[in-house]
Each structure stands twice: as C-alpha cells, then as structure tokens.
Image (cartoon, rainbow, N blue to C red; front, side, top):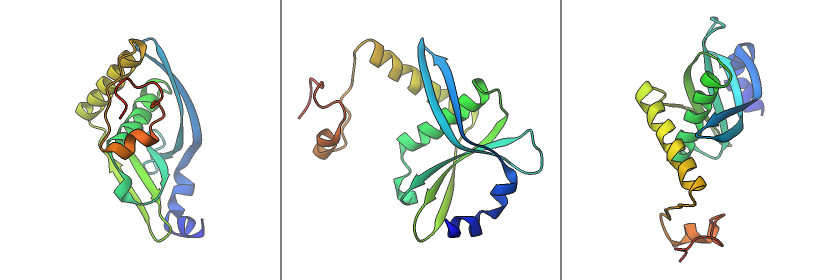
Length: 151
C-alpha cells in the first residue's frame, strides 16, 4: 500500500470515484459491475480514465482482462454517461507497479461489444463453445458439470 501511495500519489488528487457501480442492458440481458477507479486524465474534470486493479504481474494481461476493461469503458460511456478517453489495467505486484493501457479505439470497443453480444446470445440460447487452452482448464472450469464436451 505504501509503495502504491508513493508511486501513484497524483491519482489521489485526480480520483473521481472508486468502486463505481453500473448496470446496462445489452441484448435483453442486464450486465452489472463495478469500476475500480475513475480518475481525471488531467486537470480537465470532464475527461476520465478507467483503472482496473489486479493482483499479480503484467504477464497476466490477456484477452479476458482486456475485454473486461473495455466493457468498463463502454459502461462508463453508455450507462454512466461519462466521457472516458483511456483505460488501464493496474497490476499490484509486490515488487513493482505496472499500469498498462488497454486499447479503447472505436474499432476495439466495437469488437468488444460484438464479443459481449455473442456471449450473451450463446448463454441465452444454451450454446457454449468449449474453449480450453489445455486439459487443466477443464478441471478449473465453473461449467464443467454442465459441459457436454468436458474432457
């Protein structure tokens, strides 16, 4: 905690909201969540950034985390009516603090929306694609009891 305070002191004066809840309707499904940190990009109070905190190190940044932060950006814009320009994943590693920007271009957010929409459609029509990277993924999967393709 002290390391974070020392390295990111400016965030405290730029913070707008922590643990900001949102709900939004997508494809007749209610998506809800909580954005870890909304902060001003600079002294301009109307331009914000999304920051999502994760434990571990930057090697954990994958498609799932990227999609999560892109979803938070979409929610901040659509459900909360906020002007968000940038989004980050901030890794709270014991040795260093790494904040990685997640792409939030219109093209990237459109792709994220399509992924979210396709996922909702799959859930509501009971179509689930098995997508393990290796056998160990099946062992840890929340849906292993229901998966018709389990290994």
